[in-house]
Length: 266
Image 1 (cartoon, helix red, strand yellow):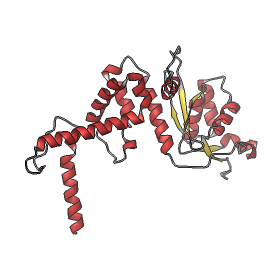
Image 2 (spheres, rainbow, N blue to C red):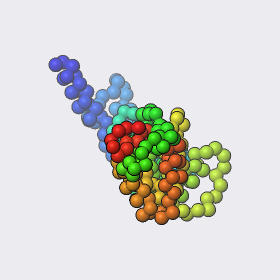
Image 3 (cartoon, rainbow, N blue to C red):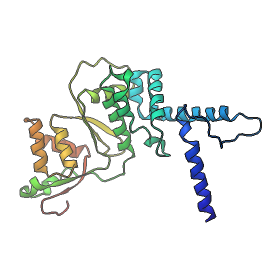
């Protein structure tokens, strides 16, 4: 009982103390005290600044390509606004910043970089894939073991690391150029690019999906049958190569298992 009361007081204190750490408009809570001779407001402001800087540093670590594109000064100013609007919901710093791509999309001073938010989405997907659970990827010969008559009804189980990011901009190319070392060459393209993020082994891989590939894969990851996914791909890209795409996705580690139409796992 005593422990429960102590935890309750701690939670109440945290709920009173924390809001002002990311909102400079909130003054130091009245119940906060400092050692004799120390100014409460000044010490609280120092603590607030340290928290803000730590969160900005976390965003810079999660979105290095975005920071390289914008420059450090621009990035940190943009990140500071995001921190003020979106306090952390988890004690794990790598979980912070999930809303940052959406924030970039509405950030006034980033409007002349409409592809920046999608680049950030790929970076977030990269980090999520890196931290995803381990799983054995589907063997390339698994398709050959399924009765062709059951193949259209087959369903695929996704690897926990698999992510897709669709973009109306060349976001995959922009991501790749700005995550690599060395100088960045001018990009002479305005083509839309869809990213596939996988982690077949220990390394995260970001690749560009061909036309129709995202529509195809999204349907499969949503639990649709192979036949249904193929139809979606052909609706978007009539020249979609089902055999090449499926083989490439299996090789990239997108899936962990196939469930044929007769419900027996392979």
